[in-house]
Every structure is written in structure tokens, then in C-alpha cells.
Amino acid sequence: MMLEKTFLADIVEFLNQNKIHFNEDSADLATTDFDAHMPELTIYPRNRDDMVKVLRKLNDLKQPFHVVSAGHNWGYGDSNLTADISILIHLHYLNGISNYDGVLGTVEIEPGVTQEQLVQFLTVQKSNWALDVTGSDRYSSVVGNFLERGFGHTSAGDHEKNSKVVEVVTVDGRSFCPHFVSANESKVKGLYQHDLGLNLDRIFYQTSFAIVTKMTIHLKPKNVQSNFCIVFLDTDEAVGEAIQIISRLKVLDILASIPHIGNAGRIQKTTQGKVDARMKWVATIDISGPTELVSARTKILKEHFANRRKLFFSSRRVKWLERLVNWMPEASLLRNQFENIKLLNQIYSGVPTDSFVRNSVGTDANSPKKMNWIGPLFPSQAEHFLKVKHIVNQIFIERGLVFSATVSIVSSRCAVMIVEITDSQGKRMSELDLQECYRECHKQLWGAGYPIYRYGLSSGVALKAQMNQNSEYLKIYKGIKKQFDPNDLFSRNRWGVRLSD
Image 1 (cartoon, rainbow, N blue to C red):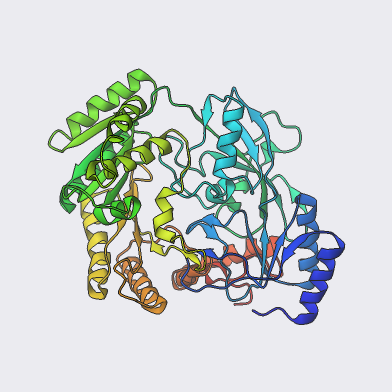
Image 2 (image 1 turned 30 degrees about the horizontal axis):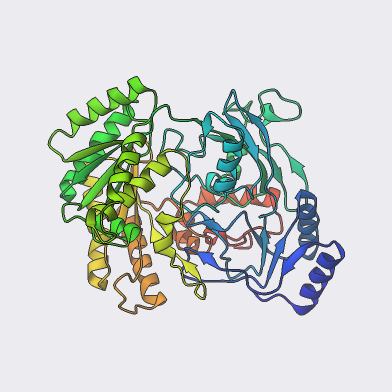
């Protein structure tokens, strides 16, 4: 939607008068959507008061807008817009960190706080607590990822579960705490996961009802021992069996982390090099914790994967191996594979890295950063893994695409397969061809009973058909949206839903 010149001039004059930074050129586009809608105007509030002024102005003018915290949360909320929006509010400068509690392991942060910033803060504090970092880059927003119910790798990998929204600002500039027992001078602010009556803060996760300006993060204890396990799986059937084993161990609370199983295509994307022929699929499992617990988990995994090739690593072993491989030629296969080991050790130790996404989004400064993927959910059972893989792989084969995927066991009973949709073979496939592949995967997966777990802002339009099938849900969703945003301005047309429809 193009901004009318009179509206644009009015907004620019307002921003100049209030000394609020803005950019009329298109901001760097970073997106997982196929349809790219770049902003005509990007606004950078210096603080919360600036943001409130901007919101009230846009609300008075009835101008739709989208809000982004950092723009690097690939697939969870990025700097792309929908066709209905031309204004982007970027909360990069709202990056305050406060109320750190080194005993309870909690900290209150604003949306502009990045993974790297929070980790550096904890380092300066000489904290005994760590952040569960994601595979996204160092500059991704912690709040942005947690709000979109992102997941990590460790025992604190369920990010919604390990956070509380403690302040939101509505589209017309009103602020309040959406969690009753955390309001005012509460001594348990952000600590208690539930509430009295309606647990209202939950409705601000993965919606566009109001702007979250403060969140309490529940950190994880820093590892006494940083240990992880790698299991090599040579067939799809072996992957299905591994998913069931891991799921059972999570049900029994033996494993608390979120294991990931990547195929050769995905591993090669990360390493930018050759992959050991035996690495058809590789499971990586964080088993860090107190010494006794690490020993027990190691023993149990050895028993359950007795017939599988597996390796166990500690931070100390990784450091020792690094000295060894540094003597090897740079082109050495072993040296190349060791880079992945180092990255895993970083992630499990709470150190963010750009490496997992760098090769997927590209490094060309003149091209939009894009990473297109689809993520079907399925029960943690072998038969469902095999069916989901067959559906997607068959569509990929028909289009000559390489199947590059990671399976994450996100809960004790459910997993998600994240599959990249990219022309990695350099066949010069158009965006329209790739988008058609996404649509076909989307259609067949939903039809088979495997819903998609995340959408970018624009690609969420693909969800509209499913939303319309659940009319009562849609009615309630629109009703809540209307209470907070009656003019349907904030992230209009998310999920393909408009109040005017």
C-alpha cells in the first residue's frame, strides 16, 4: 500500500519536530517470505516515549504499520511487510536491560536487546546463568524470538515457557502489565508462570494485538559440564527410531534439551564443505548439567543407541581436538567437520553464532537477505516422520530441489521438520517457482494433518484457508484484535486476517 504524499509529509514533519530518526529509503530487507514488501518509511524511536508518540500519531492518521525488534528472527518475524503496510517501526534503540537477579536467574529486557548484547551483559555480571541461544545470528532479538514461541537447544529451549510479558503498549499509546500478579510493586514480577483468573499475557505471544515493551526472561543455570552427544543415522528408518527414543527419554525427564537431527544437505549448508559419506542424518543432543547427571545421560544414550555410531564431547575435549586439527590442512575433511563440533559447543554453552544462518541467507550486500522454509509439525513417532518426509521430498524431486532439513524434537510428544526451499543447485529457479513449491507443500501437509508451526508476516496469508475453516476461533481472534486495535493498524493482514473481512 503506497503512502499518500500528504500523509507522508505530515508524518515526516512530525518526526522532524520530535527529533525521531527515520529513513525514507527502503530498509535492508531480511525476510523468509517469498513476497517482498519493503517499507516506504522506517521509524527508529530512541526510547519508549518516542514510540508512544509515533503510535499515537499513526493511530490518529489511521496508518497501518508493522513493528520489528531487530529483524533477524528468520521466519519468526522479520523486516518484511504485507501489501497493506508501508511503515515499519524498528525498535533497535529500545534495548534496556534491568532487574537482573543473579540468585533467581531472571532479567527484564526490552525488545531491541540482541542475543549478543544479553550474553555480553551476563558475562560482565560474571553471572552463573546463561541464555538459551538460538541458531539465528548474534543480532537477533531475544524478545522477538521468545514472542514468536521460538525454541533453542538446551533445557531452557521452550522460550514461551521461560518468559513472561510484563509490559505492553497498545496502538493508541496506553501501557499496562498484562499479568495480574506481576503488576505494580509485585515481589514476584515475571516469576510466576500462571496468574489469577485470565492469564492475559499469553495472548501477546505470536499475535499483533499490542507492542511488547518489557519481558522477563528465565535464564538457565550455567553448565557445570558442557557435554553433548552426536549420533549418526544412516537411513530414514533409523531417524524415525531415534525420534521415538528421544521422545520417550524426554517423557521420562531424562533428556531436558531440544535435540536436533539434520540431514546431509543441511549439514553441508552449514559447513560449506564436503560431508562424510556416512553422515546421512546426524542427531545432536545436549546432555549438559551436573557431573552426575551428565554421566547418567551418557550411560542411557549409549544403551539406547547401542547399535549406532555415536560420539560424546565435552568442552575440554573440544579444546583438545582444536589444538590437534589446527595442524591439519585447511582442506582436510576432518578439520571441516570439526568446525561443526565447535559451533555446537558454542550453542550449548550459551554463545550465539552467525554460522548456522550465514550460508542460508547469503552474504551478497547487494541482494535482499532471504531464507525460505516450511516447518510441519508431527507426532514424535517414526510413521509420521516418514510420511512428512515423503510428502515434502516427493514435491522436491518433481522440481529438482535438494532436500535440506532439520528435525527438532520440540516437546516430549511433538517434533517439527524445518525444510529449506531454495535453489541450492543454481538452476536459476524463479521466486515464483519456489513459492509454488511452498504452496504445494503447504497444501499437502495440511491436507495430511500436519500443520505448519511458523509463518513470516506475508507468507502467513497461506494460513487463511485453514483459519476460515475454524469460524469460531476466527470470530474470537478478531474480537480480541478489535479490543486492542479497532482500526486494524498493527501488522494488518497477519495470517491473512483483516477485521474488515
